[in-house]
Image (tube, rainbow, N blue to C red; front, side, top):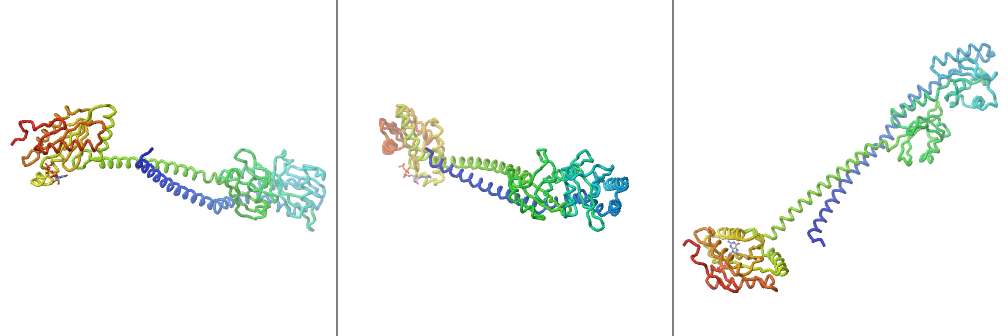
Length: 496
Ligand SMILES: Nc1nc2c(ncn2[C@@H]2O[C@H](COP(=O)(O)OP(=O)(O)OP(=O)(O)O)[C@@H](O)[C@H]2O)c(=O)[nH]1
């Protein structure tokens, strides 16, 4: 089981970790979502409308101009006069159509007469229009329609069936009777190229949708194919299709498996189509997401570093505190509390190993007098010197502690009484040699006892104290043990 201190330390580290992670996560996510919202707002309010404006102005040039040319052709007096006067000179009509083509850069120019059902184009007569020919259905549709023109995407027979956008204008005589259809054509390839160019330039998906929601013109997908079909088939958009097709312009959002899409719609009255400009949120925020992952990685790194520093700092202070709690600050020896723990352990080891152990309780003689005559600071100095002397005379395995006041307890492991007594005597002599100041030698009395099985810390110290008391009684400056009492060995070491 973990000690309470280890549990406290783990709790503290977990708390720091939690606070750091929560703080970092909160700030990183708040800034990510704020940036994402501002990107979204900028896509909806600025980017897509701007793209739509740009595309629209180019469309004016590329698609609307042909509508105007066709409109002009339908009102052309030469063309109407030529039809009304019986379509006599085919060369005049072909010259006219050729002139329109070359002057305005159209892909094709045509006129179909209602009277003769002849299809004229720039190179001459192409064919006769037949009511039961499916490819001619467009003509009869135009003849019967109410609007002045339509835009139709069809293969062009005059140009090896190249897919072409035709602007089919109704031609009326001066009394508003239908006399034929005229207009120009653009290759779809050219228009798709234009869209492709827009897509590449603006990084968006662009396509045109007619009133029924059919995608009439589009660039290529990222996957390579052309976008086709109806907007009701686009996942996420189908639910809003009616609203989109009724609007003359506006912003829409829809979600699909690929994420969120922002759509700007603009109605182009000349074409009767709607321009769709779509931007995927995923592509817009991919840079932001990379930054988010980088931020999270940096935060994780900083968190780990801070936790490591906290762990090392706690450990250092913990060790220092433990040291302070176990050490006597004046002498640097173990204190009474630490001695009890160390001695208990030593007793268990001695009992298990059946090895001898002895304890020496040391007390400075007439220390009060020394304090009184030389001052408390001198007394402290003597206590410190005594501590150093003990450390110098003992083995690393022995235990020395300041038992209290001017009393010291020494525990000698693997040492019986016979070996301990001479050592105690040596200690007494070394202590007497310490420079105590004012020429006075420091004298000590000591009680030495052997540890006996069944001794507790208290009984062992009590027995040592009894011997110490005996040494004091017998005249101090001596070592007494339960078995023998050693008088100070002559000659005394003080230089008096
Ligand atoms: N300078 C100093 N004196 C201390 C310290 N701890 C205890 N003392 C003093 O040590 C003295 C011990 O005096 P006593 O118990 O009368 O013993 P003693 O004068 O040595 O007499 P005997 O032990 O009978 O030889 C007291 O005056 C305490 O104030 C300490 O940390 N520093």
